[in-house]
Image 1: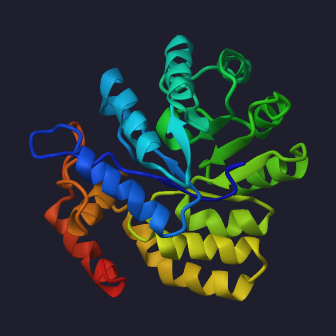
Image 2: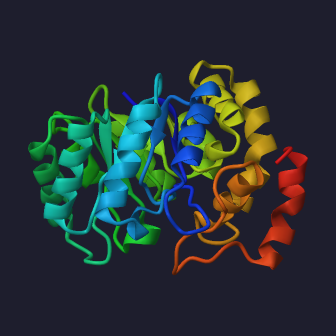
Image 3: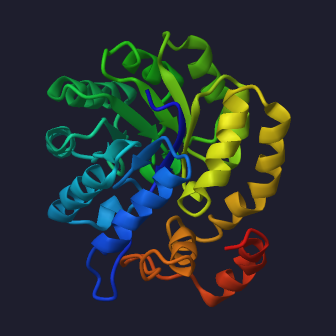
Length: 289
């Protein structure tokens, strides 16, 4: 259902710290005009952790209202199952095509606790749910066996895998039921995940180069491997540069350069340091950014 390229969009801010609605709407247009299949607001890249509930819901509403072709997979996760259910129901009420739900962070639940968390969310809404496994942010891994159990639940339709563990990803792909999608959550591993049989990416880099990232993914999925590999090689320095400091610090810096928001994340994140900006500058220049 979410096969192809999905962009985990930034939440652009104005100088007074509020959500920049005008820039957000232009960003949705930019993504659609450049071949992105799905737009993902209020994920980690969208700074969901620093948005109020009211802002979170408003960002999702704006993106759904502005999107004319792309699907909207709204961020709706929490370390509190009841809160995740509320956010998921809000996304459903607003008309989202699905919910991206990060695994419970900080609390470090057991695998059975993770399973029951997602099962409760899935039972609370009628739209598709996509678990998001990112141990580097959550402090716990959603193991392959747990993902495969969750894949048996009707409206859990995919996983965003950002564990970096290719053997784990291979086991999920090999054991998944028909129709269950495996999406890379790491730009630098997208080519490898698709080569294993994965279905696409939820990307940070496609914020600024949606045409190139979507073209790369489309080439791989359509069997034009040499073309996909050429684009992947071209973009690999960008994939690395966008994590020179914690995401979304670098991508917000890039998006300010091309006209989307003021480049500043919310505290405790800071704008990109001068040293990091100097380091990634040649990469951005080489790509016309």
